[in-house]
Image 1 (cartoon, rainbow over the protein chains, first blue to last red):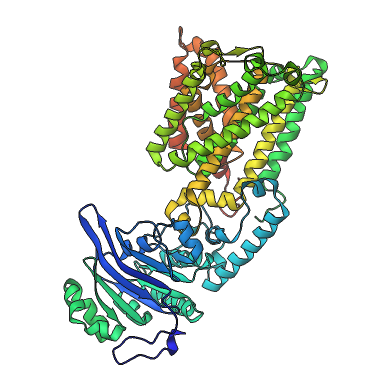
Image 2 (tube, rainbow over the protein chains, first blue to last red; image 1 turned 90 degrees about the vertical axis):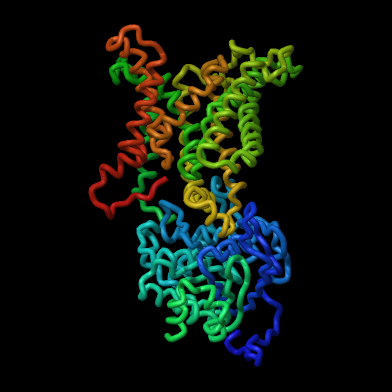
Length: 278
Length: 361
């Protein structure tokens, strides 16, 4: 587990295994606009890696590249040593990468439980014929899926909301539901895209607690977050993007004092300073 | 998946099936000279009820596609037509195709044609669906509209093989045989009525099973957010094409049943107008409800009937175009005041206690 890794004098950690996710010199151009330029990044098994940067720095673009929703213009993305560039999002999910969305993406009209059941989609095989004929296999799979979904709802503390329409939940719980849905995929790596955005301090505390406890159970997390104190408190390593380039990477303490990071956040200097003091 | 004994689905079958049995028996035996038109003041005939059954089969498929998966189709009547003409050609034009009479005269031949036709139309729609269902919203609506028109023109123009005259052009095909079960001819109309409603209830049961399954959840998830569905491992393009294929196969099956009911088919029955009519029926019944199918079909067929018989009393010299105006008006009113349709919206409106929330398809 990462918590036991020793920190070497240069600030990097000693890694026994290979990286879980490796981004190699990835660039992405939208027409003439370079959203990402030669970004390289590694996420190690068991860590919570923070990804920060001002608005428009390319954080969400990077998430969309990792999950196959966009294709990189150049560079390679490897998951567990295998290139995943060119795979469809559903194939990447099947390999074990799940994500949440900056703007909560709920399935309108579906209950909380149904969201988690959809999250577990790839763990069952029954198709149209199985559904129509209601085969024993389909029924067994359905029971297993329900059991898994309930276990996840209990794990994240949403069980009492199970039969409520998801859109009726407060935002804080909607974001936790997105995490529950991603958990149901059974991922090795979770990408959380600004899970704290729009939440009040109490909701943020609950969220941080959930992420921390998932990580303690072995989940690797890549976290994009605007709230400095949240990301500084959670991540064991932080990468900073600015104008599509990686400008700094290292443990939170080092990032706080990095002059390039402070410069990049000039407009939001107070926030960094506040986080550093707090 | 947990269901209570008195779910709306239970009531649907518990009321619907006996109702159909009573109507069929009434028409079969005419006790004391009673009949369906006599009891309903001429509002309902067996002919209308057979059509309601046929449209129910199509609408269950269309509702799965539009109401649950959220994918528009403005060309559904074309699949209905493909089924109808597939049956018509393979039962009437056998000589043109060089099929042996011993084969085509067998009682089971039309049944085989019907099921093979539905399967082929379903597979074709799956194949067409893979590329066109990548379009969304208005673009998908336009593409399906175009597809429907292309198929309609192919039916009208003998599939482009004018020397064969397979589809009979504008005039279509006449003399389609009645369906038989061995020696038993499924006619008079009350026998056919039972057959059609057997299929219609089958379609409803199928629709409910699909909705309450992993597949149904995936479809509704796609409706909600394609991006999120794909991100948890749902193969969105496959599911969209699959439900498009299923809805097309159901429409084709209804088409075959229609062909053997009417014993004559013409391309005009399957053009753009009828496709639009199906969408209106779907919206009126409630797109995101399986039980909306029979109610939507019944409501629109009754309106059609009323327009045909009553309109000239209000507006002399009124012609068919007023039908289109009436449908447009109905669609607008439904969308404004009852966007969930007669069944879902109506139930919600009737329901007083918020906790009594029926889970239904």
